[in-house]
Length: 94
Image (cartoon, rainbow, N blue to C red; front, side, top):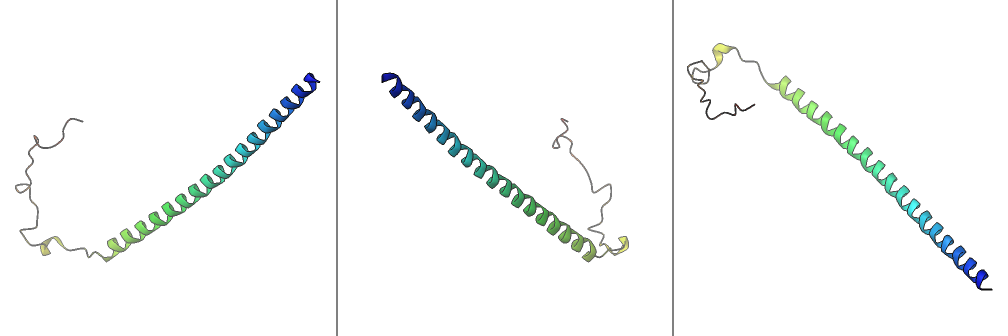
């Protein structure tokens, strides 16, 4: 009789473990599905952002007029004398 009670207890414990494993499996499956959906949404957002950036940059390139060099005022034109570098201030450690 004691043996039977121990056997029933072990069966009950095994059933409880199986139930917990099943619930854990379901939870992980749902989590994996949610992560897949999140990844899909992130990829779609990235694609939309990339397309929007391409659209903006192509509009900016097409909208900006190309000015001949003689139409640039002298104070905005660059010459070697105006461009001096202080190499102590720049990062030359590469």
